Image (cartoon, rainbow, N blue to C red; front, side):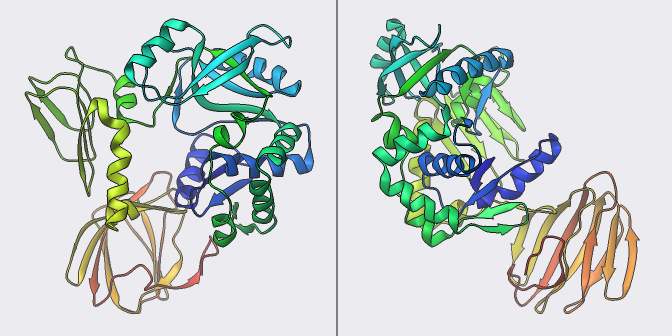
Length: 418
């Protein structure tokens, strides 16, 4: 079962295919409402078929290095949850981390060795408090991973968050099937109170339990976490992409293409993508969200659309745009094809870079190999297909009076798009 933002639906689908994972229920959120509604709706679906189902909730943005240790922790948590507890996974801290919330363990549970009641949840601490938590030995990092029994979760949510339960019931009843997805009504989902499962339930219930686990876990929701898990040089520098370090220490560079060179700096995070560059003090990376807030307030395009756009057939990236023209890099997955379509206002020229393309142009169908091209005039019915075993890559040059994505008429589509 997956709950994801609708913008990520094709990425999740593709990653599941690449890892031979068969997806079950796949819910799409039109907007974010934090973790409690996502967990609750998933639990409602499971409850309908098995009220005592044990549900393991895992966020997508973490690293777990000790897989066998994680499996043992899940087995322990399952025992605890089966006995009616709402079980949290607490990570044994390896350092005084200020970027995580903490869980203070209480008394040992009779259900078995290695599980405790929760005495308190603690917000992200300052450095001094984090050091005190580390020395105390009774605090663990709040991993955001949970194991609940469906009926226990439903009972406690009705007790502490009845308005959320009522709103989520309406959302679940009105889901619309779209391919292998289930879409939430945006109007109904907006009416759901936005809250984390910690605030909505776990800090209020007396059924919360914690299983401490030393499993090589890390939240990779920050760039300093990526730095921590990356291979570093002798000066503590790490990079993904093209980078040169001169007289530089403890710095993380992530480049999507251009060379990034640093001279005489330390403790920096530098991220260069197609449309933006971030430079931040490594100790302030938790404040990157403030930049996002500013971008949203200014209605900036960079926060609304990623430079790479994913589709069920592959992806495209705009690499140049100007008056009456746009250049895109297009990738089509093996065995996939775009819709049979035409455009009223633009012509297109395709140049194959890698792979083999099967092209439909009006009544013709023909194959293009690497370095070959085709011109598609305005109003031409056309289709692009990859029948090969490797990704098809091409450059598309668009010219015309209007280049918007809504200038499209679909005649046939494997993905039932209008």
